Length: 277
Ligand SMILES: NC(=O)c1ccc[n+]([C@@H]2O[C@H](COP(=O)([O-])OP(=O)(O)OC[C@H]3O[C@@H](n4cnc5c(N)ncnc54)[C@H](OP(=O)(O)O)[C@@H]3O)[C@@H](O)[C@H]2O)c1
Image 1 (cartoon, rainbow, N blue to C red):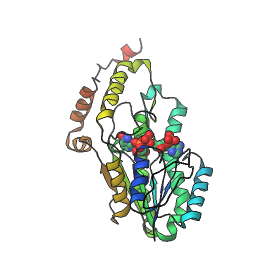
Image 2 (tube, rainbow, N blue to C red):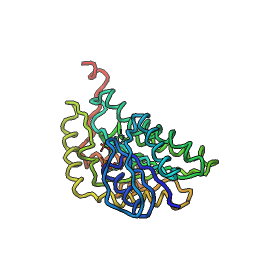
Image 3 (tube, rainbow, N blue to C red):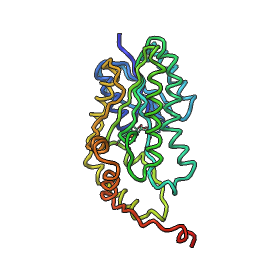
């Protein structure tokens, strides 16, 4: 009997590529998205495309109901929906930060909570799409990194809670991947005090995007994490050299390396008396 996967954020990038990998392998696929009604080429598995906004519990509940009515069960949940808010913390408005957490963390938690009663019926796997940015941090990513570090902690705890139910929790940690992430989906905050370094950072991000690998490799890692039957938690996907370097280099050297790459040098600390002027 075909198994069923529900994927969030399937309209583009990693989510869409993941839907295609599962469908080619003959799975029933619920490729959910905020606008719904996506089109996919005909593949071995059946694909349905319910509307699901991770910040709207009604749409989550509706999508889960529809998928269970259509396929009878959910075996794998892929929490993929997310976006990056970049810019200096001083320039981030509270509502921007809240929306970043609503989507990347609270949304993931809400979908998981509403899918769990179905998953508990016969066991399964939850794959949370984190990032190498859930294990290390680059400048101007306070908001995004905070959400992905949160996803790592949530997943690492949840895996223990769900062991008795035969449900595995997996973390897939992509490195830079060419999707809509660095273009359409990306949001920026700014502040005049950080103008120069922020401009350099934005320019580097733009140049990097063209050289990144596409999302298919990450989708295959998600498929492997969902189906390998192991108790392994973390699956880096196209991580580049950064995770390795962060683990190998002493902290001070890592800080200098990232600082030099982005032209962010240490200023001279002013005395308390100077700061009062
Ligand atoms: N690309 C990278 O370099 C990279 C690296 C590490 C981790 N990641 C992670 O990979 C995941 C997928 O990103 P991507 O690279 O494939 O970027 P993407 O092409 O921009 O896809 C992001 C998806 O998330 C969806 N989404 C955003 N807010 C949503 C909401 N409230 N409810 C439901 N869906 C929502 C978007 O839907 P709409 O079409 O409606 O906007 C889109 O389908 C994200 O969690 C991201 O943090 C990406």
